[in-house]
Length: 317
Length: 281
Image (cartoon, rainbow over all chains, first blue to last red):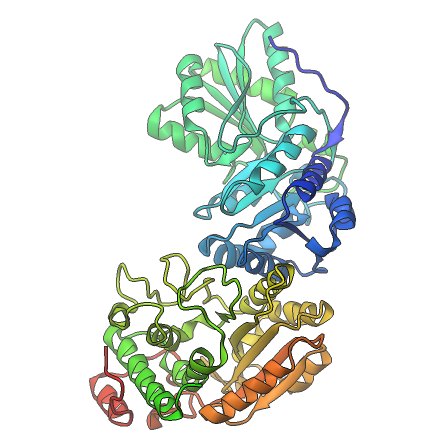
């Protein structure tokens, strides 16, 4: 098994901030907008270094999305920053009409996604955003797993023409992917190779999947562990190739099972290669207040539940 | 400036285009379109600095955004008669495989359209974004926007109106089609909006009234005044007092023709009131 080392826990939102800082230096067309959450989104550096390219919209996300759409006319590449909840559901129609249908080159950058937002509770813990965004024709949907990947993705999406939803989070989590990685939109990232089961994970559950694969190894099974950072377009080829070898699959995500990564994977498999699948995801529920760890435990989103799901799906082959 | 006789002829021809487009597919929005005909003709023929060929980015030229996208018949007619696409294409309005969708969109690549609109309340925000990009690009030209009065019931407008003043977006002229009508009745009966001048002023905008919003010369004069007021630290609002359905007697002063097409007989009467000038498509 490959060994992955946590170089020190960091929040993925700081990876976004670092990527944006880098873009500020290297891409003069990048502009940033924020709806009163500069600190939370780690946009302070960009604001200080490029005040002329930074736009504070106040607590008015609908207006922010419209402004971002308009800014593309004349060649700017707007990055909007707010919580995932306010980046999607609150402004769905603005994104749908002014950005997606209009084909505008806006990068919707969304922090504090999922349960790991923690104590603020269900009003802020969106578990439906991947579904909302992947439903929009032409929208690229990315959910990154650690600081380094988030930084690389932030830079990469500036060079992709078209609307992008970039989802990341609040808690400090293991930082284990390569600092100097090249982020390729739509390309699965194979972390472990095995024969008995495929684990496909996105976001914070990628690290948990690696832990699950290690535990599985101790029980005498080997797992393909694939990081799907790009949920749309989905790397169907990598998934089909893996299940052709393993014959079963577990998907893992910090999102409702309706509309999430697991659903996208099951569609591909139903079409191309029907395969037993278990879904590690929230079970059509809202979240609640609590620490990120306690929430992930209560709602079954950790290495332990991934391990259980793999053992179960292996028996279904 | 184009000859006033030509402009008057164009206004009548555009009215014919509007009526014939909606009649052909028995759908669409004639009332607001007819009411804004003079405004569109003045904007595209006299007021805006436009390049001959269309580019989505609109660099070094004035840009127009239509926020109340349902008045697409007047927009399409004036765009085509201003050279953006063949006039014959008006025949395809709302038909399958057309670039002339029910509401304007960039999706089918129709020259002259830079954003989709239809779901109301989004145009001022988009216009602000384009205005800020013009400033970043040191592009001295202006953003013109039209929205409906009923449309101002959408809350996003007021987010945008607050932002535009707070950020001194002074290369933006937003005109409000003040016809006092919306789908369910008069704006006063549906949701009274009070004094719009006071509201815009309270938000920090410079406001101009064009009392005769169906009089070409009054529009040109008022909009030139609006243009003179740009670049002075405030966004500009033009309250354009129009009559919904203007130019067709039985469609005027009522919300009834907001989204209904005339039948054959009604079309004949309406066209007789607007005899052909520059040639039908």
